[in-house]
Length: 570
Ligand code: COA
Image 1 (tube, helix red, strand yellow):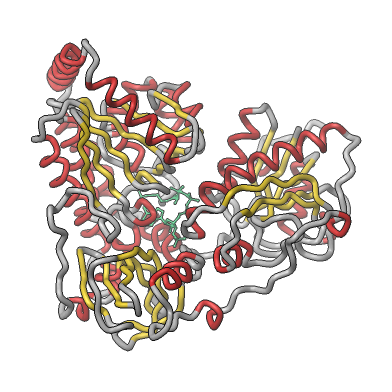
Image 2: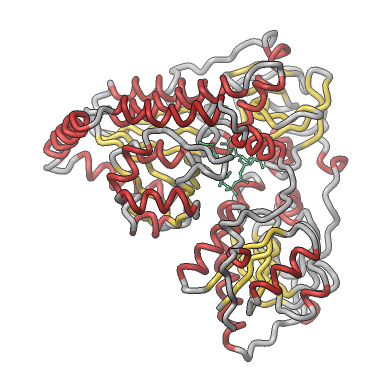
């Protein structure tokens, strides 16, 4: 079937649907919702049998929905309407929520229902629910709706005819999100910030400056006067509540971008007492800890929970220090678990942008960041006492994919999407030793195609083409349990020392053919051009990315119907 995906952005949900549809043999193309006339043009060019809208911020024009079946993916249960569906579901402590696929009509979210799938709510942030439960339910619901559409005899049900508990809810205002630091307990503060993460955040003040708060974590031992900032740790600040305290990792100051809290308030944070973790890398809970180490038998596990998977220079350096420490432990397998939502999305574009806000150089910070990332990748590639495994429970993008590929094995959860390419960021060449790791896994031609086409890969597809080594099912806890089991089996396998010897010999052979330093130098020569050269594309793309500029056209590699030689054979 020819399906047009009409969307505000090619976000992870849209990517997932595009990949699922492609795997089932459907012909898809993508158009961003820029203007009614542009959508009309796209529909005329592509002549789709069906339009699916996974992520829209405004209504589809009547000129389209009156002539084509348009299926809207709404992140709410049947009957639910409005732009703050998940925010209200969290705030109202719903125990079950869902995704509904409905047909577009004049009134937003009011059309007849083609399919709906429910899920059990998890105590998590909005962005995390969206990336896991909502995305999973949406792909099930869309595939079901597609089957029904294809059958030709399914009649979608009017919402009024379905007994449902969903109802119309208005946009959640900042007044409704407001935190009352003199009354709200930690659970309430966490829920309020969670319902607003990663957008729009909760409007508040810090150090008497207006800002929006994000990325909240519980703290159980430290306490202080409610509302006061009482401690800092690495990039996070701790604020006391009436019954404890809450860390927040990210803040957006008025007129600025979302940044790690201690960077957003760099000067003010200097005066706040540091609360270092006792036992350093050893996992503690519940508190704010972005890097944690656990050890069971001969398996060491490194967690790195970096917000949005973005890794700044300092985070790369700290993770490398943790890795070097973990390498000294008496283990034979080292698991790199990343975070729950993302494994890694590469260098930290917001922190890089921030360097230029204070009169510094974004080019210099990009250079430092990519070198810190490369040092980390090098430490992984040259780990020789352990088999290293990148276990991807969450999505992975750009340099993050090649950081994972620097490990001996990559195991990915089935629902995970990988974007192992850099070009979307202003034609960035990329580093992290990808020119070494990618061709030896997938071959030279496939490596070129991956970089050029810039398509998201499902975990299944990534395994098929040899980019990754295993694809495991389940949600994040189930995946992690299976990863732990497989890692333990590997650590006690009789051929483990033979594997380690083989790994060492392969590395020595590869090094003799072409040293890692040469790969790095070649990649960095290109990156130097991206950062410091005449063509500012990378800086322009990064600026638009961090400021979330509205797209003014759909990238040509997504809008296939706009290819010069595109022809719809009806
Ligand atoms: N640096 C800083 N922030 C990043 C980031 C990075 N490298 N990658 C993602 N983010 C942020 C996004 O700005 C967004 O922030 P928000 O919470 O304020 O909305 C959040 O992470 C989620 O990203 P989003 O694009 O909505 O997620 P997605 O799952 O739909 O898409 C990617 C994933 C990886 C395709 C996309 O985020 C991307 O292209 N990231 C940039 C990767 C990159 O070019 N890195 C630099 C080269 S190594």
